[in-house]
Image (tube, rainbow, N blue to C red; front, top):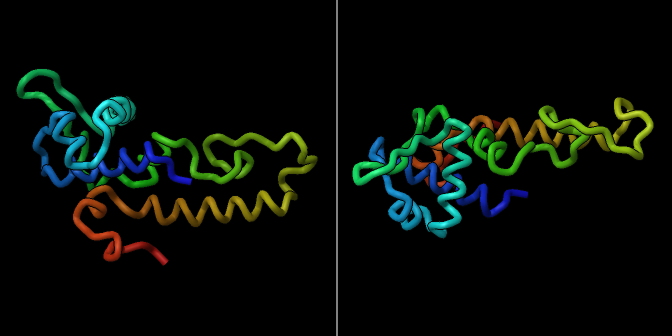
Length: 145
C-alpha cells in the first residue's frame, strides 16, 4: 500500500516538475502540493539524499529536481520513500528475506504469485515518470499493458 508520505513525495515532485526548473521554497512547494510543510521538509531531505532533488539555502534558494522529470520514475520515488515494491519480503528483488516458516522458498507457490504481483506493479511504476504525472491527468497517463 502506498503511504501518505509517498503520495506527498510524488505530489511535491510533480509540483517541482511543473515549476519547470524554477526553485521553490518549502512553503510554496507545500502549498502547491497540498502537503504539510514540516512533513514535506523531512520528505525533501530523503529525496535530496537519494539524488532526486537538489536544495539551496538562502533568499535565492529553494528546491528543484536534480534531473529531468522524465528521468525520475514513480517506482524509484516509491522505493526511496516506502522501500521495496514487493508485497512480501520473500518476493523482493532488493530486500529479499526468506520467510522463517517456509522450508523451500524456491518451490513456494505463494512466493511465485507475490513475485508476479511485484513484477506487474514494478512494470507500471517504472514506466511512468514524474514528468508524465505532472503533465497529465491520471486518466491520460500512458501505462503499459
